[in-house]
Length: 130
Image (cartoon, rainbow, N blue to C red; front, side, top):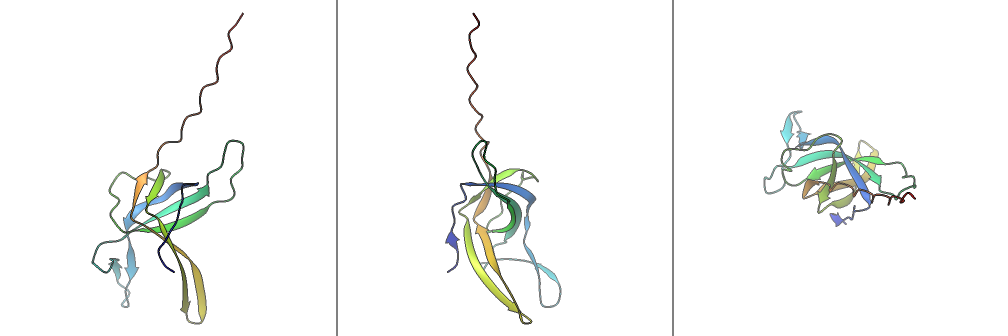
């Protein structure tokens, strides 16, 4: 099963490395841009994903993930910025190379957008002095 939709609304995603063109090494050792089957340029972004928890709760350890973006996300993204993925998907993979097996999850999304700022807590009512 590939390209499974994934819901990340309960996660805080923070930019580690801003989006850039995805590059791979070809069989001759040259660095070449990655495109999809239609020739559309692919981009990659590194995010730190951490479970969003309520006030007073402690979040478990987060993890850095790389996400392939199927469209140019545009300018204006910077390290440390909170973001959301547009139509995120996940695919399990397993690759064998020289007798070693590597497996994991690959992430892909249609795009990237700034996250809405976290809502501000309501102010505490002041007590009236006598």
